[in-house]
Amino acid sequence: MRSTMFKRHRARAAAVGAGAIALSVLSAAPVGATVVSGDDATALATAIVGGAPLTGAALSVDYPCVADDPTTTTTDEGVCPTGVGTTPMAGFPTNGSTFGIITSGNAALADDPNDDSGAGENWSVSATSIGPGVYDNQTLRIDLGAATGNCLAFDFKFLSEEYPEYVNSGYNDAFIAQLNTLAVTADPTTQTVSAPGNFAAGAGDVISVDGAGPSAMTAEQAAGSTYDGSTLPLVARTPVVPGATNTLYLTIFDQGDGILDSAAFVDNLRYETQPAGLCKSLAVDPFEGTTGVVLTPGTTGTLSPDLSTFTIPVTSNLPTGPIPTNLTAVGSFVNWGDVVPRTKAGTSPRMAKKATTPFGSGTASIPAGGSGNLVLATTPTGVAAIQAAQAQPATLLAQAKQATAKAKKYTKKAKKLKKKAKKASAPKAKKLLKKAKKLKKKAKSARKLATSLTAQSKAVAATPLGTAVVTVTNPSNAKSEVLRIQIPR
Image (cartoon, rainbow, N blue to C red; front, side, top):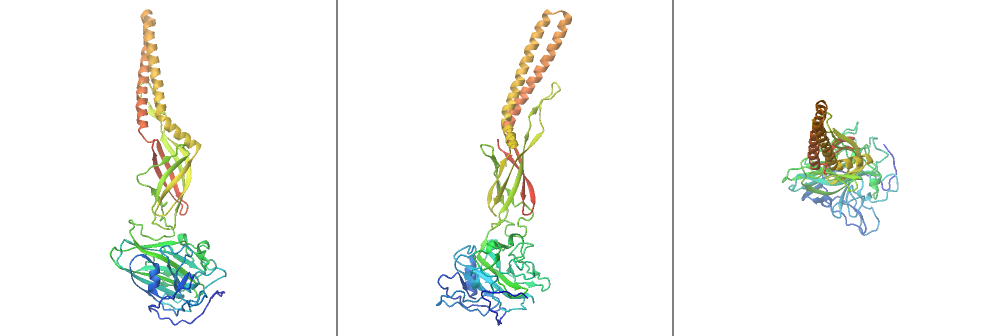
């Protein structure tokens, strides 16, 4: 077992009635209080509920709470694992003016300065229904009315005094959310938590001091509270049947021993309507093996007037939440090369093979569930390729003009040779006429080339400038994919 110093550590032999419903009223808040501790389940649920109808609430364990004395100025007199935050703290509330606090110790300590190595309340509650290695558990049951959408969601943060000293050490406090069925167990040997349907985190993730990915803890996120570490402000989501009633179970506990508190700040419990597949909580890889963005439908890339940037509108395919999609991108510009005349007389010219030129690179951060722009800064070679593509219709017309001039030159020369042939002797006349015939053939080929070049100039002018082939990478999961965006002329 660990030993530690506490700001307020009251070891007590608590007479606990598992399954009892605590209904005592939260004590009146002292002036300036940020946390009102108490075990009134309805008051706690009311502080949490945002856009969902509340029909009832209960706490699974009735701890012997001590209420604040509102007639004194002493802070943190209250001793209770649950309470209501009444002023902003560590990014909460997220909706309204209050939020719920559920802890494995004393909720009243949440707003204390973080000025020592640990804070907590050891209730000495062991051998709980969750498992022999689990201490000081608490479950808040919130009964909700008919669902007005297809998704149940709430905002939360998990905070702990176990961080960072006891990460991956077996003292794995945890926070769990389950819908309609409460079933939580923990293996005392492996510390593995089993909670079917837990949607506080996504698949493969656990909300605990050992959390990874989006639920990993940092000291910065706990600023403004007594705790040493916290997750980001997260959003838990799970599908529901529109029109059906639901019961939410929020569970927190100590694992390994009963000291050092962990807490969950919870707010804005609501029903939402989400597109198919987006009613989900964040997983270890919230992008689920994708880059996390798609091209915004109905849009195309845009070049700046000075060709220094290329902007691509993209949309996040994550549900709304705190985790942005950070991207890196490298692009190439693909367009047709210059016209290549056929060397064989009498054949039509052809376009060159497609030319690929390094184009530019950039980064972007797209908010979850939102849209934004991926901006590529172009390279000098990319700008040159774009300028060549922009000039291509005019270049083709200039080539057509040159071919027409050659046709006229050949025709004029052929006429002169024919005139000379009339005055020349028979053998010489024959040679002159033969040369004139070749020149006429060259003139015909040149006119044909001019006609083809003119037609191609018109065709090119009516087509996009080219294609940007952009490789987008999400560094968090190393997933890359290729976006192909036509660039308007």
